[in-house]
Image (cartoon, rainbow, N blue to C red):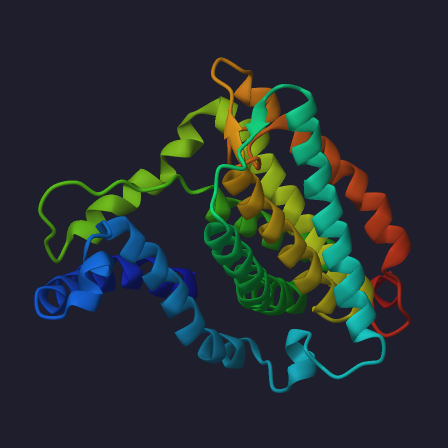
Length: 295
């Protein structure tokens, strides 16, 4: 709880200061003009990530992690195969959801981009898949799931850490307007919880994100390392970003069933995630720790 408070309250307090600094710098340096045009909520999300990384090592030390093995990044045979299999499963599963949405008429292909835009998109998507996948797996599986498992049975740890993951990723997007003051970030924080008061977003949006957390934690538990989870997470991120870039939603479609252009808030993705569970149980099973040892 202290770690989450540090990340979110700290990010809300830090973002207006960074925003003001960039505004001041943007007036003096032309190359910062575009960055200075970003709204406050963009700075908040970056500050959340920054503080999550800064506080990660002290958080891990508090939980008793001493070595790379304690957070799922130890050297082990077959780690590259686990990462590859995880990435392929994540890539193919979300690609399947995207194809179903296209076939169902929920969206239409949008290829109206220049070669440079395609290149930048795939570079950014691949970078996000690698970096975000690694950071979030260290935070939610290596740290939070590992911490819960030190206190509870691994099954309870699986459920609790996945619920935390679902809550954090279900926060609604923030929209900052007007003048920015030192407390503006704190004023925006309640907006993040607005999605929990709309049941058509909670079901299946929150359920989807919790299932994602369960799959990632289960892959970690099955293999005893984070490599499969990092790959699986990366494959999902790559296609979720690509879906929003290469498709356009068709008006008046049933977004509750198909999902919005974010894809994660529709029933279609829930069905795809459900199919992933037996695949994870069958593919990821090693004698080094993991599910067999826990069982």
